[in-house]
Image (cartoon, rainbow over all chains, first blue to last red; front, side):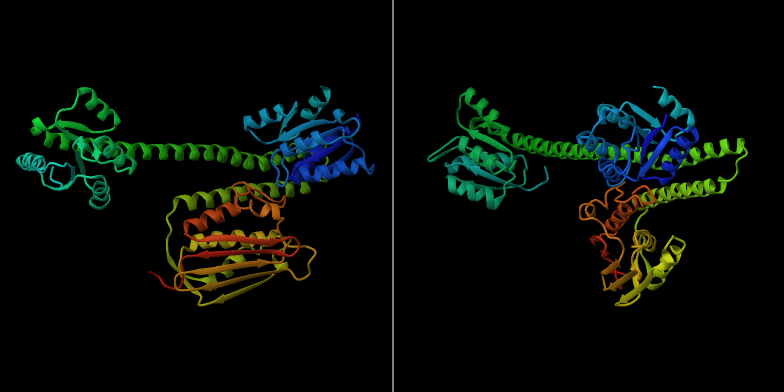
Length: 128
Length: 376
C-alpha cells in the first residue's frame, strides 16, 4: 500500500500529524504538503511536469486562507490530467457545521474525516 | 381637539363658507378657514398654507372635487379630504370614498361636519402611527434576521477556529501516547512544542473574540492619554513575538503627546496593526522597519503605521477587514484581528484605510475624531 499523498492544510501541525500517522502505518510513499488550495494546485501542476508523482490521496482541509477547500475542489475538477478519476480526495476538517459536509457531498466528495487523523481512521479509509 | 386647524375650503359660494364657519364655531373648534375657488389658488394653498384639513365642494366653475382630491394625493399630502356638497347621488359619494376621500357631508346636514373633521384627523393620526410602527417593526425584523445569520456564522466559525488547534493537540497526544507505549521518547519534546504552539493559537483566537465582544458591548470611555506612552507600551508588549526584535521601530508624534480618547480601544487598534507588521515582516530585507506617525489636532488624530513587510496582494486588500478573513497562512488567529480594528474604529467614529504593495510594504492610515481638546 504505497500511496502518494498530498496534504492541504494551513495548519502545519495538522499536516505533520497526518504525515506522521501515515508513516507509522507504512502506507505512504511520497508525501507533499501545501498550506492552501492555491499551493496545492501549483504542486499538482508540477506533477504534470514530471518532477513528482501524481498523488493517490489528497487530504484536504476546508477552511484555509487564499484558496479554501471548496474552491480547490472546483479548480481540481477543471484540471485535466491522466488517471485524475483515481485520485481520492478526503476532506479532513475540524468543522462541525453540517452545511460543510453537505456542500462537500454536493461537490462529489464522498470521503470526509474529522480531525484529528488517527491510525484507526486511516485504516478504515484504506479498507474502503 | 385643542390643535389649531388650518382648513382649506374649496368653495365658490361665500354664504356656504359662512355656514361652515358657523358650524365649526358652534362646536368650539379652533381653526382658520382659507377659501379658494379655482385650481391655481387651490394648488398654492396646499403648498403655502399646508392645511390640516381640506373641505371641498363638488362642482366649481372650472374645477371639481375629483380633480382636487387627485391633486392632494399626487402631492402625497396625507391630509383629510372631506367632500362638502349639495346633493350628490349615493353612488357618486361611494366613488369619492373609494378614491380616497375621508368622508362626505351634505350641505343640508352641516352639523355632522365638526365630528367628521375630528374623526378624519384621528384616523389619519392613527394611520400614521400604525404605518410608523409597521416600518419600525419591519426594520427591526430585518435587523434581527441579519444579526441571527451573523450569529450563526459566528458560532460555526469560532467553534471551528477553536476546535482546529484543539484537534491538533489531540492528534499529537495520540501520537505521543503510542510512542510512549513503544518506549520511544525521542520526539516527545518536539510534540510538546507543537502542542504549545497550538494552544497559543487557540488562546489568540479567544483573545480576538474577547476584543470583539468588548468593543461591541462596552461604551466608549474618554480619558487623557499620553500617545508616546501608549505606543511604547504596545510595542513592548509585542516584543515577545517571533521576529519582533529584528524590526527597527520609530515613533513620530506631531502636535503634542496628549489626546483625549478611549485608551483600551486605542490599544486594541495599535496592538493588532503592529503585531501584523511584525508577523508579516519581510525576512529577505536586512533593514526591517516600522514607523508610527501620529499627528494630533484639537479634535482629530491621524495615525499612520508604515512597514516594509511582505505587503498584501491587491485582490486581498479589500477583504482583510472582513470577519474571519485570513489572507495568509501565517495568520495565527481566527481572522478577526483587522475586523475588530475596523469595528473599534467605527465605534470611535473614525475611519481606516490600507495601502499596500507586495514586497514593498503596507501603510495603514487611521483618522479618529478625538484630539488634544477634551470637549467640543
